[in-house]
Each structure stands twice: as C-alpha cells, then as structure tokens.
Image (cartoon, rainbow, N blue to C red; front, side):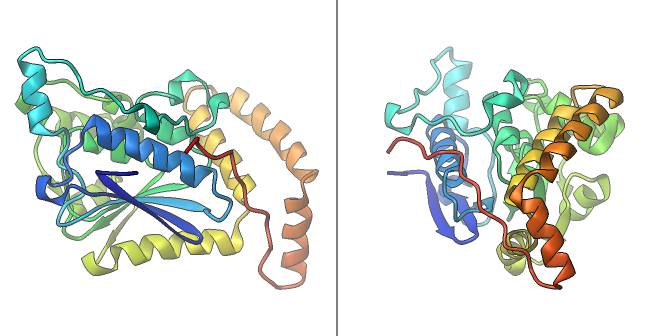
Length: 280
C-alpha cells in the first residue's frame, strides 16, 4: 500500500526506507503519512525490537519536495493525507509536546535509529533529530538551509538541536545554513556513530540485534519516556519519578529474569512488547 517508502521486517528490526531516489527522497505529505503508518505497524509488531529509517539511493532525504514549496510560495494549499494511511503511533501518555507532526517519533515505544546514508537537508534534519540515535555513512552531509530559503528553524529544530549540540553550534548551523560532513556532525554530537558507507545498515541492524539479545524491551520503552519527559521537568521531579518507576520494575518478570540470567551467566529471555497494530 506504500508508494513512496518501502517497509520490511527482518526480526528484530523493522526497516523503513524513503523511496524516491530520483528526487533524493524529497519529503512529501504522502511520504510523511506512509512513514507514520509504517511506524505504527512496527510498534505493534512483537517481533520488532527497534526501527531503522534510511533512504534509497545516494541520499537520506533532501528535505521538502521543491514542487511542494513552490506551490506554498504561490499561496497553494498543502497536500492532503490519504485516509487509508491514518495511524497514531506513539505513547499518548508522553503528552502533547511529544505528539507533534514529527515529534511523535520521540514517543514511539521502541528505539528508532536514523541510518543516514547520504545528504540530509532542510526539514529532514529535524526529522532525523526526532529519531533516538543517528548512525551516519561517511558519505553523509547535513544542511539546514532555512535562512537561505527565507525560512525559520522549522519543525522544533530550535528546541531539538540545542539539546543535542548546544546553543552555539545550533545557531551556527541555523544562521549560516552551511553544509557539514559526517565527521563534523560526529564531533558536534549530532550523530552517534560514523560508519563506512557499505556497512551502515548492517551496523544499525547489529545494534538492534544486541538490544534484542540483552535488553528488556519494556525497560527500554520506559527509559525512552523518562529521558524525553525529563527534558521538560526539573531534577527533583525526575528523581521522584525514577524512584517510583524503580519500585514498579522490581515487580515485573523482567527483573527476575535479568537477575537469573546474570547469575546463570546466560543471555536473558525478555518478553517482546506490542502497543497495538494500526488499522489495515
């Protein structure tokens, strides 16, 4: 049912590939709806421990499709989203701040990795920042370009980027709209890992396989919620919440299994999680 992405599950990973390589995977509302629908499918699939977003061809995403931008510049309407792709992934308990157009990715209950295989530009930068981790090919580059198009810091990038790379680096990238390569992005903290181009996807998959082999999916979902919600609160409240969640974790089967596995010097066998599947 997808026209602009591909979706596959190779347990324990789901792979969403932006698939408009002739347009450098330029973003459209159709693509946004398809990604969101696929996210809901992955979140609801118990075999999936982590989700990878990558791009087909030589780039990750060139940002908004220029034809769409030209239409908006002429006063045209935004694209409509097909009803059959309606989906609502993510944890509503995270609150409205994490349920936005692309910030919903922060509320998805499973780890999300952006495997950045080439250039990422414009609105695709904040979208990639809404993923939990970013693995970059050594051929990747990053370009916001907002002021060069007469635009502002789109899609919460003015909130997201300072929390990753600090205010000074953020203002440099947003003021100048200059392009940086993968190595500079790594030094800034914009990406977690730089990989040889041909091994990018396998390294992202290996990471998720390690999570599946060693870590509780339930614990990871709660930890993800803790980390992002703590950005909106103070230290005292975060500590109180962590204490209550710790007491709750003692009562879960995963705690007993984790202790037994450690004592028996074996890999733990944690239950997978599902948050419900989207309507077909």
